[in-house]
Length: 530
Image (cartoon, rainbow, N blue to C red; front, side, top):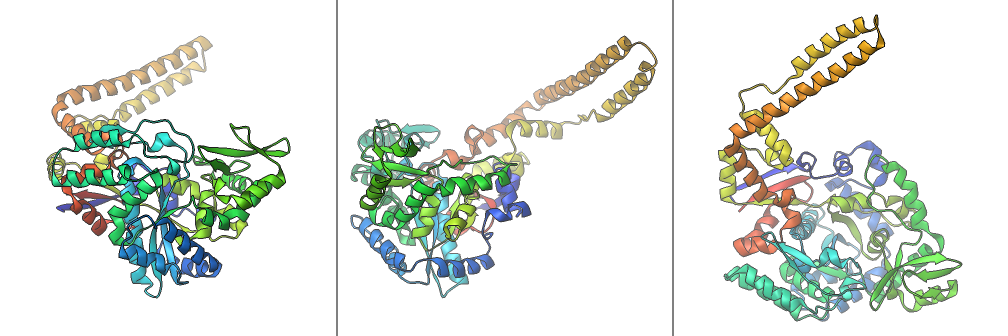
């Protein structure tokens, strides 16, 4: 690694006002979270979770994980971590993600490395405790369009098939065609062979998407003791059943979250609660449960339940009830001895809506940590940046603004017409004094002329900028080309590129550098040169 630099999340321009204010610890947001992510606060979180977590749930969790891993080759490190979950001094650090095809955007990798690195850091700070990194598979999600593709060198590799129900239960039919496309795109190298073999074993040798994803993520992180959990589990849902019943009959989440939303009036709301935040999930359906005309109905189906019938269904088949985005965090925190959730800006934003609901259910609200973000560069790109005298802040700037900023910087002409505009204002103010003493038609003409003159100066500014852009075209073009390399489609690289794009070029060094570099408790956008 020849260069390792960073830029704060707040100055990157890619995080929402809510997340920036959270990171700045604005006092008005204090009521929306439990503790800010700091080493000292983790000590307090450990104490709270130790007192509130129900000890008997550890054995249920242990048994469920053993069963889930029964068809997988489990590493010694992961097996040891699952065993540690039986110990009352063991806690988890959790991240969650959809079952994106071949991990989807590369930030999925960053989330998991953030989680593992935080566990290592906490073990150093609190050696009497154990910390287990957990990846929660969003196997009950049903948004197939969000997960059925990934991008490799700008090309979209897509899995096309009919779908309904929870994605984790989806068979891997049709992925042999995707494998052929992927293999052809990667080319021939040792790293390409590794990736092709990984794809093949994950998706062509496993029956459904949950099993395939478990294998894939396990292969990438098994030596780091990552524990992968599938919430679509009958035994785990038995633990959650009493909360589901309250949700069905008391609408607690709907009431409590709607009490919180006014406190977020100055921000974009991420999710809005429904009266019932539970799906009915069976065979090829995952549909909302609604209460209409004194009965529970499964949306878009003919299925209906009376009060007694739905209680009976919940008791006998808890696996048929699936929490939505509002209730899934509660489910997670009930069954895991969890201290912290690591997520992207959008995830943390919706978690900030949920604390009052946790309080009502008397479940400890976890520490919320914004995951590490990374921009991967190479030596040639670093050299271009230096030759063009660019800073990382320049390259993170919105493209049109960057274009304008650099044009003004390169130019020897003063683009600031503020003095002329101020002079113009003074002249028209003097004329307005005269206008008050004469006919109103003169006043209207004067106002119209003022608008025209101001517009003329604005247009001259724009024409001057345009002329200077032509003069410095070659240099500006090189700047924009570099930015486009680093920010594909003027978006964050980590949201577009797949990890295979970097792995095929750098191999295991890519993963190793991430482990060495990423510090989960630093709110900085890491720039890594390989």
